[in-house]
Length: 341
Length: 96
Image (tube, rainbow over all chains, first blue to last red; front, side, top):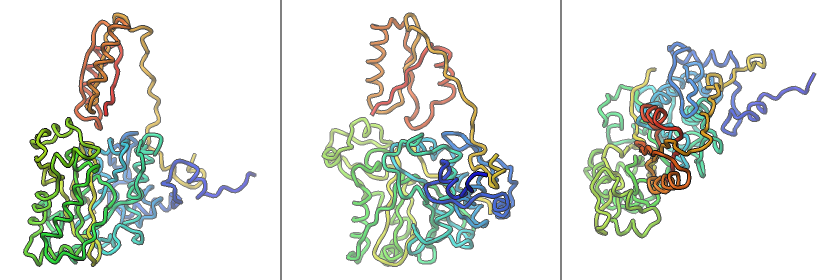
């Protein structure tokens, strides 16, 4: 008889993990996980690019077990994967890209609250099981069924900490406004996942502004960073206002729509400024979906080329900080859709 | 197999069938060669130079030049099938 096999080491020796130990997906654990959904275990969710491995409810449950999910998280993992397979998101491109973008899941609606998906203080982690494990299950699926293995099919230059997990709720309790899903026409009672391909959160600290104008000017400046793809192609962008910054805007009389509009107007740089930075390229400017004259140094290039590309939420805890997440250039459009609980 | 060890193989469902390489032409003289522009900047410049070299140095008879819709998205099936039917070989170009 050979030496006993340590199952945790066995999984880490295979290319089946994100580098951290996984919960071993025994038949019993997978059956318990499947109790988290009414859906048929053999139902096909779709093919995960670029390897086009077939995801079924059962194979998603296997990965939810591995990631450490509770059974009640399974509907969110299934819904998140379904959203990611919508063609407009271009998951195929992100799986292979040199960039490091990760699919940020913003989950709105009553079910997220019921299972403890966190949108308040520390929401990007660590420390919150639903946030940590739902996003991790997605990543394991992207690797094991989609074949998105770094240095094999993923050409990512740096990777990204957000590629371990990137899943939050909105801090609806402390938001002065309606949630993102409602701003998109869903009802507050609908369970909705919005997926945006973006970089990790960049923190924007401002404990000085006492009115929205200066605060939003600062955030807009941060949104306009050269080398982020927002300045060089049509690209999504997510902004999570901390509840304190959101309250400052609301006290100043601004609605959610007002802040959204103001950030779209303010964020950007002039052609002359961009020409002095590395990633400016005439052909890129000519490919914008809006007219930009590359020969006019005063011409304004907005960071958000179409207002639909800005995803504004309220998240995080009380304190003078917001977070913004630049997007990915590869023709990806965010996807928002309801999911089955 | 993995079942015997008490767990489920998480990669079950992943595609495993091997796709053979298309047969390679031994020479390009008199052949039709496709050039596929992936839309990254200057891919067209690189492909023009490749096309010139293929004609002048290798006697390629005809070039079929096509462009993808977006560099990070797969070429549409119809485009792949068109190039497969017209061309003896296809060169893909990355710009950047």
